[in-house]
Amino acid sequence: MNYLELKTWDNEHSSVWREIVSRFGQSDYDDETKRTKHMATLKAEWEAKAYARSRATEYPTIANQLDDLYHNGIDGWKTTIKAIKDKHPKE
Image (cartoon, rainbow, N blue to C red; front, side, top):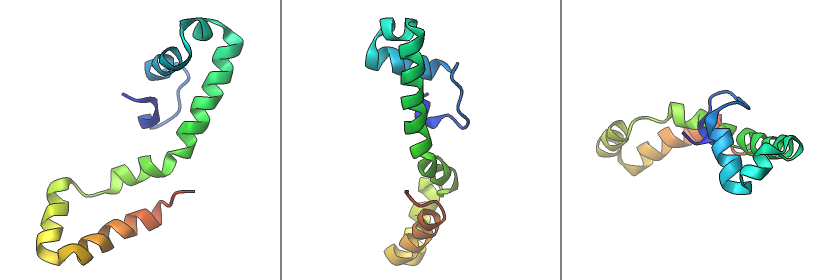
C-alpha cells in the first residue's frame, strides 16, 4: 500500500516508514528530528490528495463505466464522471 492510499493518517503505518526510507534514507528515519520533518511533508502530500481518495470510492467500476458508455454514449459517461469530480474537486 502507498501512504497516499491510507484512509486515515497513521504515523506508524509501514507505508510511511517505507516512503521516508526510500526517499531520504534509513539514517533520516532513525534521526527523530528529520523523521518528524519528513512525516510532516508526507502528511501534507497525503492531505493534498484527499480529493483523489474521495473520488476513487465513488467512481463506478470499469465494467459499469463501459456499460454506461455503451448505453449512454460518451456524453452520458462524461456526465456521470463529471458529477463525481464536481463533488470532490481538486483544490
